[in-house]
Amino acid sequence: MQEHDVTIRVIGPYSHRGLALVERFNQTLSKILYKIQYAVESISSDPRLMRVWVRYLPEAIDYLNNYPTRLIREPGSKKWGLEPVKAIALERIESRPSTKYKRPVGKDEIALKKGDTVRYLLANAEWEGGMEAVRRSTDPTFSPSLHKIRKVVVIKNEPVLYYLGSDDDEYPPSRGFVREELMLIADPEKVGRPPQSILSIHIAYVSPINNKIA
Image 1 (cartoon, rainbow, N blue to C red):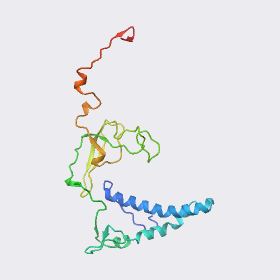
Image 2: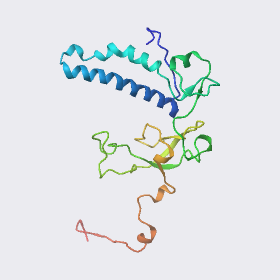
Image 3: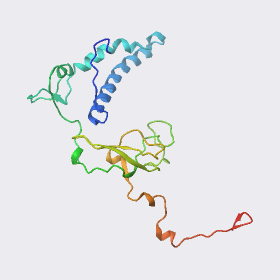
Image 4: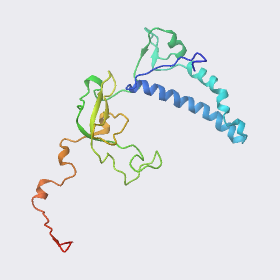
């Protein structure tokens, strides 16, 4: 990219909006190129055509760079929609979020605290592996293991992002979570134990006799 004078944009690693822009661009670019590649492969099995999409990559990028983006506009303009090539040349642009939240986000959000114990929402096939988009009926919804909040990232107008892990956490998840993906555990010491009312009544006594349980 540097050899062809392509500007490399650096985004914040904890920015939902920045990451979403990159992911959306990659998704749109893939759809355009895959249509071309699939069409070629449907009429020919020539191995030399397996990377024919590379030939159309400059045209696809040029199309996306000149296609108006509805979430940005020139300062003072009443109409939303501006081509990325024009936006790059400007010192400042106006933008609007693509998602409207029905709850307070960012600094106004009621956030969990660092050190809180939580369970996290499991992704599809994360529990036992398998197909990425399939969740088994026997898979748990939240992680059976408990984790502590290691880092809390607050960015204006974006949901608070939580990262889990601690010194004694052997397998902490590497991705970040929003509040809806976490289950707060108020008393971690009581997790996995029957209520005290049951423990005080139903008590079983065992004693070994000849290496057997009586």
